[in-house]
Structures are given as structure tokens and as C-alpha cells.
Image 1: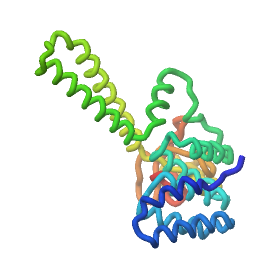
Image 2: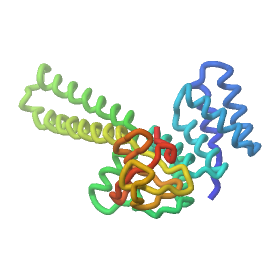
Image 3: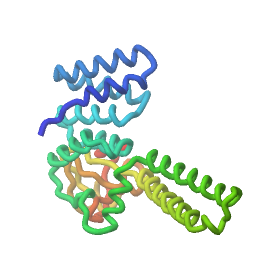
Image 4: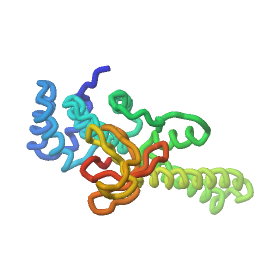
Length: 249
């Protein structure tokens, strides 16, 4: 599979940059990428991303890292992009490809094994902004229907079933929005060194619990000094040095 810089998408995003200097910087980054000067392209994309974080910029940052052979940092950038635009097909394609470059074979978070997994995947597929918009839409509909039957010419009894239906939709979407918000609040990271010994406790002298390799994703539970407690997808827990990971933004 070939990873390609999404130039067309990114050129459209120039509208979001107000100053001419940002436009020049972006075009220089795209040109550098096309000329295989990934280091220069990465520097420029990261500078732009500091001013206006966007899924497109994180996407191209990830592309640069993957081209440079830095799988962990590339995956971290892709995951950061997915948090902002989880439904983008090109992004998910590159993320799936990058995962094949990792060594650790952990349970796939996208794997569906039951109804709960389907529910979670559907929620995760859309951004939190989409869920907020859907909640606002249902809330507006609920107000309109309630107003029509409650204070309009129609009797409340005629519309109580419809009112109850939209009330249920509003409550359900509110619960979905909360779940999606909690997903975004979960701290996650990626191993960025070739191999890391995960310790039972926060210290170099602690016994090694297991090994992780570059590109492995995990949840971050807590931090103690320069050590971070993590949990991987098969529920193993341990501690790793702070400088061996990149937190997903």
C-alpha cells in the first residue's frame, strides 16, 4: 500500500489560514513532501499545526513520520487526526496501513465481537462536534413539537406520543454525547522507541512485566515523576519512562 500526501484536501484547508505567510509555508511544505524532503515538510506542517490544529495537518504530519520510518510518531499523529475527523476514509486507510508496520499483535480496537462493540464503533465513527450538532437538532425538534402541541391550537393529548418519542431521542443522544465526550477525555499514547520494558512499578530497578514495541497504543492512567502508568488493550498494566511515549493530542 502506498501512503500519499492528501494535497488536494490540504489545499482546500488553506482557507482556514488568514495570513499570506501561512499559505506560503503550507505550499512550501507540500512541495518539500513531493520532493521527498520529508524533514522540511514535517517541520513546516508542525509549525502550522501549532497555530491551527486540524485533522488534515495531523494527517500530513503522520505521513511525513511514516516516510521517515518513525512509525510510533506517525501513528500518534494519525490517531490525533482520527480524534478530530474519525469518518475520513483516507485517514483510516493510512492508519490501518501503519498498524501493519508494528510488531506487537494486540486485540484490534476496531474488531467487532458483540452488540456493544457495534454501538461503540458507531459512536466513535463520528466526531464529538457531529454528536453535539445532532443533540442540538433533536433538542430543537423537541421544543418545536412540544410548543406546537402544548401551546398551539392542537391539544397536548393529540401529540403526547410524538412528544414522548422526541424526548426519548433527546435523552438517548444526550447519553451518546456523554459517552463520546468521555472517549475524548481518555488519555492515550503510543510507544515511540523500538522496544520498551514495561515495569511493575515506576523505576528502572523494578522488575520487567512485559515488553512493548514501537507503535503500540495504550491508555494512560497516571504519572509519577518521569514515569507513566499505562494499560494496553489486553488489560495488562505497567509503568514506562515518559520519554518513550508520545501522547495522542
